[in-house]
Image 1 (spheres, rainbow, N blue to C red):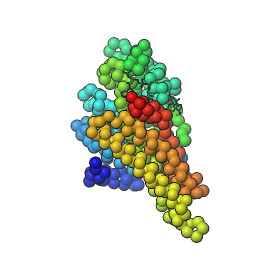
Image 2: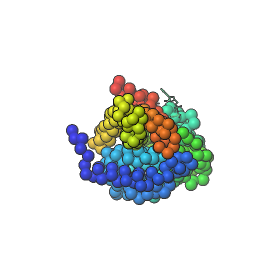
Image 3: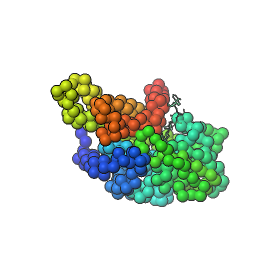
Image 4: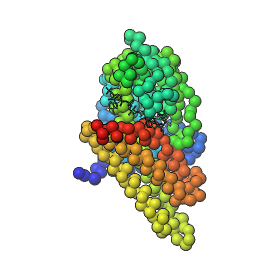
Length: 379
Ligand code: CAA
Ligand code: FAD
């Protein structure tokens, strides 16, 4: 048992923290208000290797471990969760999925530019009628011999407009249920692909979330990931790691709000002393710090298990449900510590509170995580 971060971990943590302070903090309020995608900042994150952190250098990645990824996700999310969701999707859903299950040709063609951050990717599982109930895929990938014909609609797709490459789950053999689903690599500029309007959201307003429509889109057979019918397992395996990414995003949102609350409590005076001298505020801060530390340990444990090639499905779900609920609680308390100032945009905590909510919904709601956890502990 060793709770010590290595020199390399500390270096990556610092690089992410510096980037967040210098590149993301300026303009984060305006981007949230105007729903502006952080395009320039994402480009720079890619140049620094943060979009393909765990990909082998052989495929253009930084070759780092999952612990480094958790540390970087926390630091970026403290400041801008709209940027960190792009990082999470590209790293843990798109790049990881391709590196783990793609063919050598798919890796050369798609993974290399994705890992270098030259392009970004998106993961298309959810549909208007298939969110938590993800096996109920209505999008079809009809087998036409040397290609699939893709038809249907995907909902709520992060990076929907900014991505060049989509990993799309679609039903090929409805009679086989979840075993009939395929995962296909689809280029966004393929004929028949339409990007719907950008969703006007409560939080992570800088990230671009869209519906994507497919009408008779021709997808070559060589763009299928894994064997025929592997698509649902591909999605579940990939989401296992994705949930560590979102858990770390929630951890970062919580610790960002906590740091602001500590700072503010030492500046604001009421009844003749700093509010940090009032026990009610001290206890709030103590509870925040404790829950955040527990979230961090769960995230790092899941990351460690992944790095050790152990099964991390249970620990990833535990990290996600605990960290996202912590983020919602801590950010709400951080607004409370700020009083009226917490309710306005300049103090950042109201945005963090709005951003926290999504971590309880995407990549499997809190209820879905509890399904995964309870199935595992009762098995
Ligand atoms: N690894 C491998 N295989 C798995 C698996 C896993 N973790 N979980 C399930 N499977 C397999 C099962 O073994 C089963 O296969 P067999 O029939 O061969 O045994 C098959 O998949 C179907 O599984 P279930 O019977 O367990 O399926 P279910 O209908 O009961 O659903 C569920 C299970 C956990 C609720 C799942 O549907 C789920 O995770 N839903 C949530 C979907 C989700 O997380 N969406 C996120 C979209 S991406 C996103 O949100 C990105 C973003 O915001 C940034
Ligand atoms: P539903 O599944 O309809 O759930 C509604 C409620 O019922 C929830 O509280 C849910 O927990 C509960 N519920 C459902 N089934 C059960 C059950 N069996 N037991 C107990 N409770 C249950 N998807 C992608 O594929 N790619 C993306 O990039 C992506 N990005 C997203 C970005 C944003 C901003 C948002 C809002 C969503 C995104 N999603 C993405 C979709 C997201 O994963 C789904 O919204 C989520 O999985 C929930 O599905 P749903 O919205 O259909 O809710």
